[in-house]
Length: 83
Image (cartoon, rainbow, N blue to C red; front, side):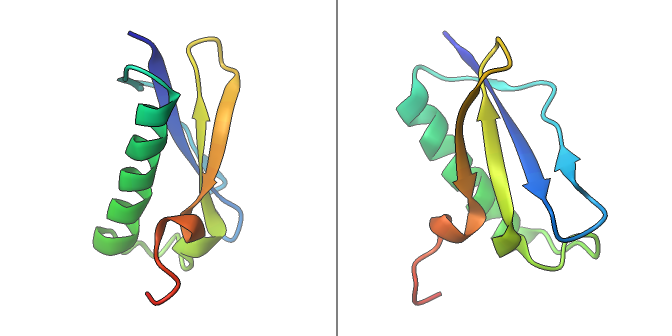
C-alpha cells in the first residue's frame, strides 16, 4: 500500500512548513485526498494555535514516498461557504 505524507504549509506566520515525516499508508490518491480534507477540517475545528492566526491561509501538501507532490489542498476548500 502506498504511503502519503501530509505536510502543512502556512505562509502567514512564523510556521512556514510542518513536515510530516511519518506519513500514512492509504490505498490510493482518492483516499489520500479524503484524509487530507479530514486533517484540515480537524485542525480548523479543534486546534487553536497562536502561531497560526488564519487556518484558511494554510494548505496541506501531499507527497508520495518518492517525495513527489501528489496534490495541494487549501484549507479554505475544506469547509462549506456558509461556515
